[in-house]
Length: 202
Image 1 (cartoon, one colour):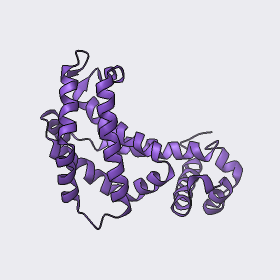
Image 2 (cartoon, rainbow, N blue to C red; image 1 turned 90 degrees about the vertical axis):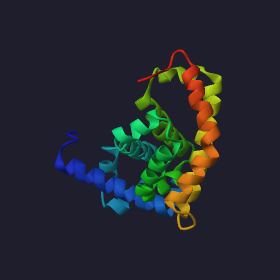
Image 3 (cartoon, rainbow, N blue to C red; image 1 turned 135 degrees about the vertical axis):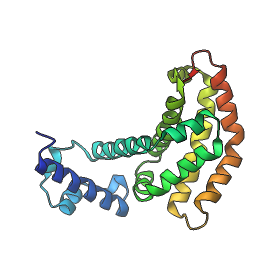
Image 4 (cartoon, rainbow, N blue to C red; image 1 turned 180 degrees about the vertical axis):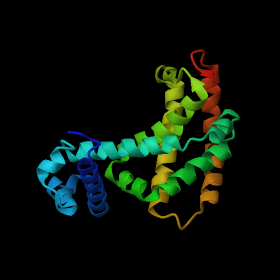
């Protein structure tokens, strides 16, 4: 199948749109391929020419969102990361989440585990890779793993709550709060990174 073919691309767009519409109304467990096909007005065969399961489709959406977020990691943000500017980095995170609010809210409902993983891949691992080389060494460092897990859990939990209702706290207030409550954990994490002989600043 030629994935650049206009018909293929159009069907892909219909599938994605229908899936996200279904995910607004139901949990992933209660979404059926027949429902996606009905909303997209396509046949089941057309769906299966793109994906084997609804979970493959969900994973493809997650990967596209991850890629989009990482593309927004500008040289300016990387410079701030290198300088250890926690507030600027937190502000970028909140701004990016807010700009992708609708799809992130849906994804957080589809799978909390995968949502947490996405937060880790983009806002932690993605930013770390931009600033450090040898980041794979984190996997073998227990203290770094524990620290990363602590930061990821806190960030994904707060973002999940904020995605449901952003009217109670502004971007700026949330960025300030996150900076204040995570400062110690982030500073500890970066200190341990700098102590690890296998990790170097770019």
